[in-house]
Image 1: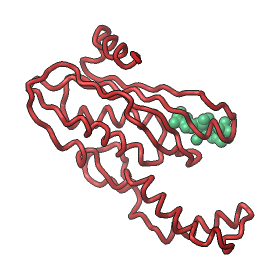
Image 2: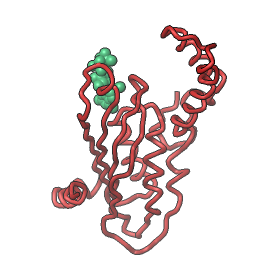
Image 3: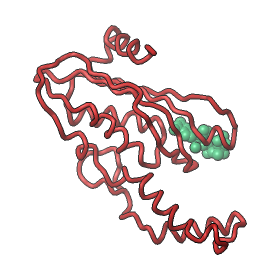
Image 4: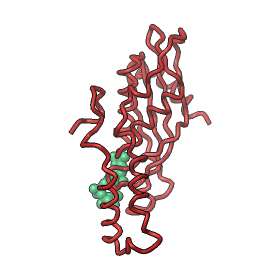
Length: 202
Ligand SMILES: Nc1nc2c(ncn2[C@@H]2O[C@H](COP(=O)(O)OP(=O)(O)OP(=O)(O)O)[C@@H](O)[C@H]2O)c(=O)[nH]1
Ligand SMILES: [Zn+2]
C-alpha cells in the first residue's frame, strides 16, 4: 500500500474506486442494521451513497502537486496566511465527518516562489477528502507545502469537531480538537507568535 503522505507518484493506496462494490457494501450494511434495502425509499440509496463516497474520498485520487501548481514570483518575502479554510473530512476510525477550519501560512522562499491563495484551500481538500485523523491531515498539508513551494517556513493550524465524539460514543458536542504543524523559520518563537496572533484574531 502506497503511503498517501509521499509525493512520489501513485496516490492510489489500494486500487480504483469501485462504485459497484461500494453499492453492494451499502446494501449489505442496510440489511445488517435491520433495514429492508428493497423498500421504496431505499431502492436508490446504495447507488447514491456509493456516488457520495466517491466524492467524499476523491482526495485519494489526487496528489498535492496537482493543485499547488501556480507558482509565480511577486517578490513578496513576508508571511502569507489564509485563515478559516473550511475543512470537511472523515474520521478513519468511524467513517463519520469531522468538520471545522484550517489556517495555512507560509513564508515564501528567498526567490519569492508563491502560489495562488485558492491553491492553499485546494491543498486542504486533497488531504481532507480521505479517511483521516486530524494530526495526519495537519502534517500532510505542512509537509507538502514545504516540499512543493520550498518556503522558508510553514504553519498549519486545524480546529475541528469530530462527529464520532458528538453523535455517538462519548457524546460531547462542541468539543474542538486543535492540531498544529510548524516548519522552518516559523518555528522561531517570535515568528510563530506573530502567526498565532494573526490566526487567533477574530
Ligand atoms: N488522535 C485522534 N483520535 C481520533 C481522531 N478521530 C477520532 N479519534 C479517536 O479515535 C479513538 C478510537 O478509539 P477506540 O477505543 O478504538 O474506538 P471506540 O471504542 O469507538 O472509542 P470511543 O470513541 O471512545 O467510543 C477514539 O478515542 C476517537 O475519539 C483523530 O483525528 N485523531
Ligand atoms: Zn472517529
